[in-house]
Image (cartoon, rainbow, N blue to C red; front, side):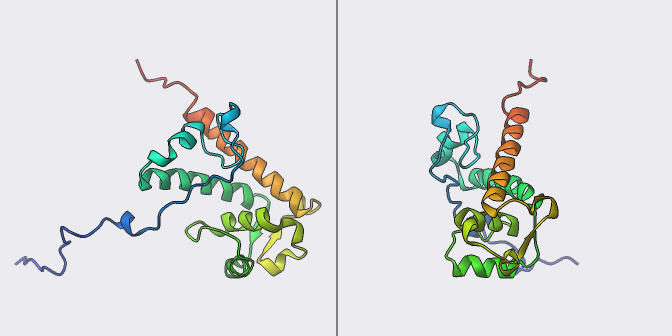
Length: 171
């Protein structure tokens, strides 16, 4: 026979899983280019409508944007670097007091490290990463800027494909 066990049944007052997650912080870095007409911000890489509507978004809507941005940043970073020791990288971020989102992956963390102190890092292995051979002739500042450029290109391509293109199936 099937019996009901009250221990296995969800409570009607249980909060949804998303409610236990920390609030999503704005990705804004204070270098907004949407005010001068860019469809994709050169600072945070959000679309102009996301910048405008951010404060009206639910936490779930913010998480969707944050997840997309984090994935693009990780892709751009992983193309040029490899994180060998995420624990060491995270430790360095904590010691250096660099703001990062612990819910993002190590490649997003690496970019935050490069943003904060690329000119001060002499030995990437002491931070848990290495630069791929084809990019090793660049300084870490130049590498950071190339990663940031690739991040913008990915965001812009996504915007052009999914936002700026008219819906071909709409009548």
